[in-house]
Length: 448
Image (cartoon, rainbow, N blue to C red):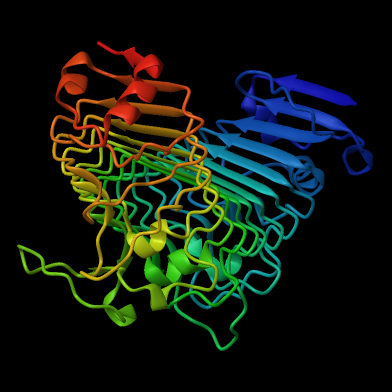
C-alpha cells in the first residue's frame, strides 16, 4: 500500500514524477484530515484547484474511491477532471458551494459516453448551488452499476434524475433538500422495461417542498417490485404517499414509516389520469386525487401483501389509514403504531354501506399502539364488527378520549400478554361483555 498525506494543496499543480501508472494499492490525501478507508485505491482532495497536474489525473483514472471536499470554482466534475474516472466505484462530493451540476456538457459538445459506468455509490453532501445531478445527454451504460445514492443538504436540487438511469439502484436517501419537489420522474419511453426494479430502500426526510414521490407516466409493470422499506419524514407538503398505480407495484414492501407529514390526507391517492373509483367529496372542492375505494382496483393478492411494520407519527391530516379492501389484504402486518395524529377518526374506513368486514383480518398483528388520537371514535367505521386478532400480544391505548369501545369479543386476542392504558380511559371504556373485562383485567398496566 502506498500512503501519501500532504496538507499543502499546491502539490496538485506540480508535475511530480513517480510510479503513478503502476500503483495497484494507494491511499492519497491532499489537504485536510487523513482519510480512513478500507478500499485499496482511495483519494481525498480538499480545496482542490480547478486545474490539476497530470499525475493527479492518472490516479483519478485508477482510483476506486474519491472524496472531493471544499473545492472552490468547481461547477461540475467534467469541467476539471476530464471524466477520467474509469475505475471509480465510490464518489463523495462535499461542501463544493459553486457546483451547479455533477455532470454538464455545453451545447454543441459530444454526449458523454459511459459516464461513471463502474460507480456503485454516489454521495452528494452540502452542495448549496447544485441544480441537477446531470445536465447532459448521456449514452447507454452511464450509471449502470449505481446501487447507493445519498443526497443531503442540496437546497437548489428540484429532482433527482430520470428513473431509467437508475436501473441498478438499491438504496436512495434524500434529506434536507429545501427545493426538491419530486423524487422520481418518468416521461415514458418506447420500451416498457421495468424501472427501479432493484430498489430496496427509500428514505426521504426534511423535504419541505416535496409534492410527489413519482412524477410522470405510470411506471411499467415490474417497476419498484423489490422495494422493501420506505421512510418519509418531515415532508410537510406531501398530501398523499403513493398514487394507486405506484402502490400496486409495491408487492414486496415490508416496512413503512411516515412521520411529521402534517398535510398528508391519505396514504394512497388516485391521480386524475388514474381515476377508476367513485369520487369522495371534499369540503374544499379542490382535492386533486381520490381515495382508493373499490376492491376490483387492487392487484391480484391484495395491496401491500408483505407489509410487516407500519408506524405513523404526527400526520394530522389523516382521517384514516386504509379502506377495508386494503386492510383485508394485510395478511403479514405485525406492528401497527399510530401516534399523535389529531385528525384520525378511524383506522379503517368504510367504503360502501353493504360491505362486510372480515373478522379474521390482520391475522398476524402482534403489537397495536394508538396514542394521542383525539378524534378517533372507532377502529373500523362499520358498526358491530368484533375482530379476532389471533396473534395480538401487546395493546397500547392512550390519549384517545373519544375511543370508547374496543372491537374485541369474549374470544378475541387469545395471546394478549399486556394491555397498557390510563386509569381515566379504563373507567369510561365500554366492554363487549363482563367475561372480556375479567380476562383483560389481569393484563392491564397503567400508564401516566
